[in-house]
Every structure is written in structure tokens, then in C-alpha cells.
Image 1 (cartoon, helix red, strand yellow):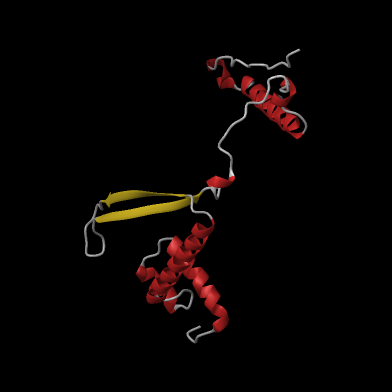
Image 2: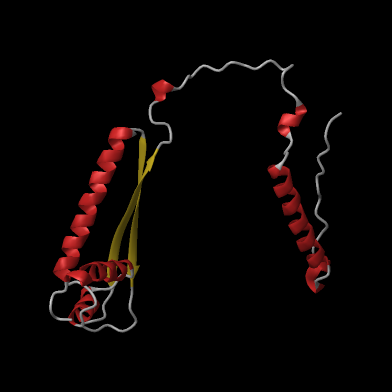
Length: 174
């Protein structure tokens, strides 16, 4: 596996990405590279740069289609103390930053009306507010599961400490 094999290139990239995600340090990555399982540490840096450039291109392309975005980030500082100090084991001060970008589902605000027209109250019927069809079946099944759970709780020995819950039953208006 020391010779270059074009068919293994995707495999090496995959195992390197998995090792990066698993927070392997460079010494572990070098060990796996010597056995032919991953890319080298310098190739890892190039791979991360390529991934960053691809991400930037995708964000720029998406921003042209949908300019309404929200970018958030969070800074995390961790100080790790070790019980035994040596040349290899010493206290670490880790600085991490996580960020994400959230695209709005509405691409252009101009294409939507901002005015609201109040529907007449005579056209509203109570049936529009009650679940029907598939939603009613799902709600009924959920109630059945909750009832089964409630019945199993009542038979458990620790139930005596619990109080009776209050159920609200909705009825259809006449």
C-alpha cells in the first residue's frame, strides 16, 4: 500500500475525514498514514482547505439565489488540567469556535404581500379548527399510546407517590 493507487484516493480521503471528525492528532494520523490507511498531515491540511473553499463557493452561490440569511457563532474556551505533568502530558487551553448560516425560506420579500385582509367571521366554521382525516387518526393513536403508558404507570409500585393528572377533554361545539 506504499505505492500510489488512484482507486484508493477516495478511500484515503474518506478515512482522513473520519479521523479529523474523530479528533485524531497528527501523531495518530501519521501512524495511520504509514500503514496506508489515511492521507498525510500535510495532505490533511490541503483537504481541509479544499473543503473550506467548496463551502465558501456553495455559500456564495446560495447567497445569489437567497440573500436573506442569519449567521450565528459561538466561542468556547476550555482549560484542561492534568493530574500528572510530563513532557507529553501538560495542561491545555483549548479555544474553539462554531458557526452556522441559516438561509431564509422566503427568497424575496417583494414577492409577498404585507397587507392582511380579515376574513369575514361568517365564513369561518368550527370544523376548520378540529383535526380531521389523517390528523385525527394520528391524534387518536397518540392518545392510545399515552393511555397505555398511563395504565402501566398505575400498576407500578412507585405510583402511589404520584398524583392524578388532569385531562382536558375538548368537545365539538353545537
